[in-house]
Structures are given as C-alpha cells and as structure tokens.
Length: 159
Image: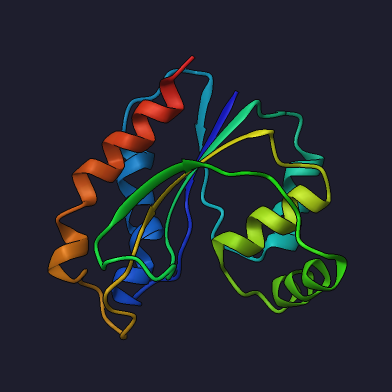
C-alpha cells in the first residue's frame, strides 16, 4: 500500500503548494494499492490515525513546499533519509505538533519517532518564493505544478 498526500496550509501562496496539489491528486484515478489522504492537520493526530488504521503502508509520497535556501521554484525530489534528530528536537516537534502546526518536517519526525511511517518515503518539494497571504502561486512555483503532480504519480506507482 502507498500513502500519498500534499502537505501545507491554505491561502499562503507558495507554501500552500502541497495542499493545493492534494485536491488534484484526490481527483485522479489510482489503482487500489494507492491511497490519497488529506494529512493537513497536526502530526500527533496523524500519528494516532496511522497507528489505529488497519491499513499499513509500505511506501509514502508527500508533496509540499519548504524553505531550504534553494532557488525559488526549484523542484526537489528525494527519498527521505529517515534519520531522527536529537531527543530535544523531537520533543520540540511534538510540542509544535500538539499546537496544530502543519509542517512536513514535523509530520516526518513525529510519525517516524512513533514508528508509523513506512521506511520508503519520497518527498516532492518545491522551494517557495512567496509566503504571503493569498491563493495564487508565484509564477516560478506555478510553473512546477504539472511536473510535481507527475513526479508524485510516478513515485506512487513505482514498484
């Protein structure tokens, strides 16, 4: 089973990349082994939901925006290393998660810490240009939408 989700806030321009793409991903035809789910809530609740689920995932593909210091609009596709930070950083991520902060890194760290994340996690991540309030992507990020959707689809369907 493969879990697919787009992570991000609503109406924060480029930082909404994952959440906006999620609506497209939800409408696509997928084989039975691919489950597209909205995980745009706190990572503690996500961990609890995944832990209680009868479905156990072998792979996950997440699409999101993250400030990593790259050129705005850069689309970076990578397999997440799965390494956890020191305990104090994990605790800080859990505390943020309890307050409802929606963040890809929080989701990865908290869910990995509690053992509910599959070993095989692929990230499709765009470098944002704008974090202002609004519903439209900046032109450099908007130009990456189709490529990101295709990357998510390809990674989800890889055997």
